[in-house]
Image (cartoon, rainbow, N blue to C red; front, side):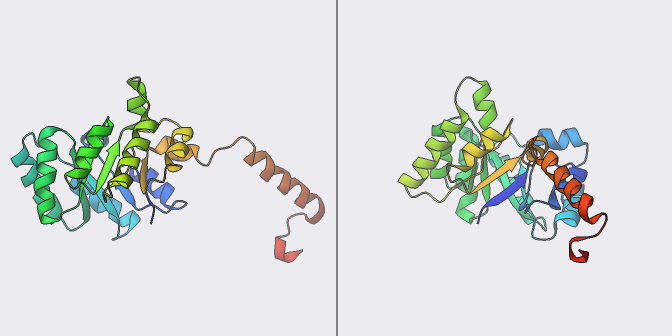
Length: 224
């Protein structure tokens, strides 16, 4: 089943979008948590109150060496939440992912900027792969093409990793990524809001109201 995440720890926005979107959970990173000023433990607790006990959290390690990443991941996996540990797809990160997967714990390889990074992370057993679509574009490459190539390699080599693309600037990027058949995605709050926006929607709703009230006034549909 497709998994939809919000890339934020803003509790107000999480509550807002949980009312209208089937959210699987949230994705976080050190920058997002630092910007919020709220620590991980409080964030997990408060988000669970909003989204429920089945919420999945993607939480990134901050350790610097392979062994330290492994130890940090072990502690994260012991917390009483559904946590997927995020690890940057660097050389030491892939070493950590490979080790962690020997114990079959859920891992996401993040900060993916190239096809080869994604492919190697998949070979190391990462459950999720997070290519940075708009950041790749900003570097002069094509983020959508990178995601497409990784998706083809996963299918060609029968690898079980799920793509979870991140870093979006607009809805065009989102829709092009979804056309590729990815199994999950994480959206920043502003782009999630854009998915609801279309200049023709509100004028159409206003016209419906005007036409109805001209004939039936303030009656509801079942009262007419």
